Image (tube, rainbow over all chains, first blue to last red; front, side, top):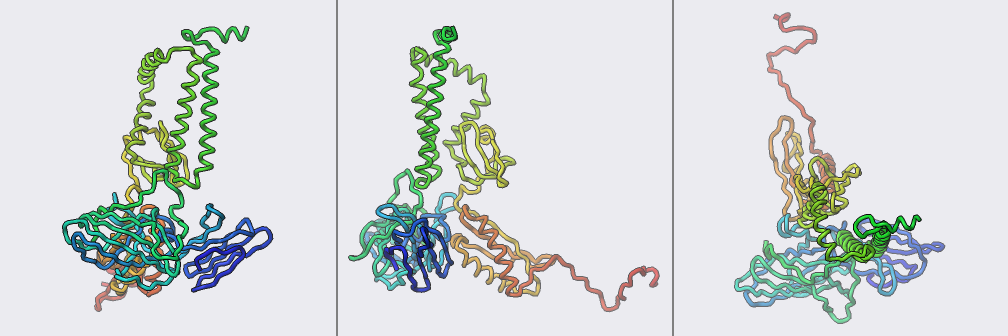
Length: 236
Length: 281
């Protein structure tokens, strides 16, 4: 489903139906998916529509840019590096535009959203909450519903640490797609309380393509932070 | 003749003509600043966050006006160093003469620096509740929930108790839900928890809690505590209450009206309307 489609087109797959039909000088975008339907008029009858996986922080409405993974605790030795594979929900973005100028037309998902709070109500952050199993291999995933994060965890502290949370900044998220949806992240643990996370702009697998970004919808004048400092613990 | 009167000195060596030239210069500068602001708003509104955009526009507008005033000053043909001395003295006189304005100005600066409120925040200041529209240098503009424009002097804002409902990223709200004494409270708790689990904005952490709180006169009263993102808490609150009511009714769990059960002992005669107890004896 992910790719570029010239107007008019129609695709039906896994309970999702997307089409753009031309009528006179205008065209009509229609989407039917398990989470709802959407119809929009487009003021043109040619061009292209791009369907890509996007950062899972847009639905049901944008309240945060943070993505939190909460998984079965993993105990990590001091000065060691562990690679985990975590599944995350995928949101599907439909863009219209040309060259470098794209506009988001629609976002929907086959996965259910849930939000959480990392830290305190005063100083913490609202996060899109992902409850998942940690794998030591790339787990099979349903392309339109799940992606896989390859997470390298380095324990730079002097103590053994139990990790069950990883929080990432959405504005720096880079998704890639091919036979799966994937992203790569790293986490450096300094203590039970403090760790630094970042999503890397690296191709997880040869042949994958970088997806367009839906978040943030509005840019900040302050430069994007590539990393996030987890100050409220890495465990439960 | 008219032109000659314009050349007459009115304050020191400053003529009326100088004042008019200065005024036109400042007016043109203000107009340019406004045009630049409109142009910036048009080009940035879809790209930059609103708070940052407004801050940027104000800084640039301020800079344009300061440059305009600076360029207009030579029309007075006065020494800038003298101007600073005179300006300082005039500033002191004006400050004493307009203490309220200066106080509002100072409060405005502190409000901008301390940032207890920001445009877009849902707040309560004294008796006014609403959304902050704009923090100006002398006053703060609030749009009440009824859509009414309220201007509050910054001094009052600064010295009042401010409740900001969205400074904290999450907030808690609660319901008290009474079910009938014949209903299964454990089942009701399971139903409510299932609904809370399904709603995306009922936060996973801190977890919601549902428990039997009191055995009331007419019902078993359950309390439901829910944490939600501050930006959407009101919609979550209204959605969840109705969803809980419908789900409990669908599962035939009674939400009773206030009621009192009166039990007569077996020897008591039925009361007959219009007949007093003395007549029976």
